[in-house]
Image (cartoon, rainbow, N blue to C red):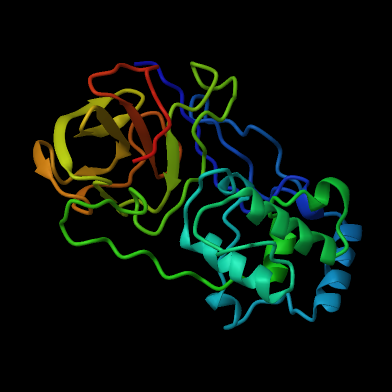
Length: 283
């Protein structure tokens, strides 16, 4: 297996809202930055202060900021992304008079969320590409989205969970293109989390394979019906064989194999399928 997988945690948008990345993206294959880190220009900082005053918000830290959801990065916001933070964002957009929802808002990112967020960006006097509806760090901080409580891991049951890493969302999307992946695209979805964070079974099924691979590191394969779910780069494997139920802990996040930071690479394939047979990692 020669997969090359990258890992990125974006703390700021690259261009959206007039802000730029403050951390470089890192390619797992080479360990080198994909792009140079950039600092915000003085004019942009002045723009932030002006728009913050118009919105009546303080951008300084403090106890109030600790109750706010941190900006999850622009890559987080893609069609089908599910997270309680999206519901919290939608409620704030409605409160600001920018909601375009006929019903909801709900936890899944949709075109209506993007339209609503674009209205918020325009309210802050952004225009053009800076008001495309994809959140950037500047507008996100001004929206003051409250932290959403982590979705509880269900008791052992036949249901499903919200995330293979409870409380965490996708940080590198499936099928993202790039020359640093051996197939030219990302074959799974990455969930960045601290080393040791629990990884759980997304559905009830059986652990049919466990091993250590040069690229994927310590891994487990959860079989559910006609599909295999690969849990890769683990630091620990709690279960190595046998039946598990949705929500059962089966491993812990790590950075084993071809990885430069702790995260779970979560991949879905037809049962018994090899590398390159990946499909959209829904469950």
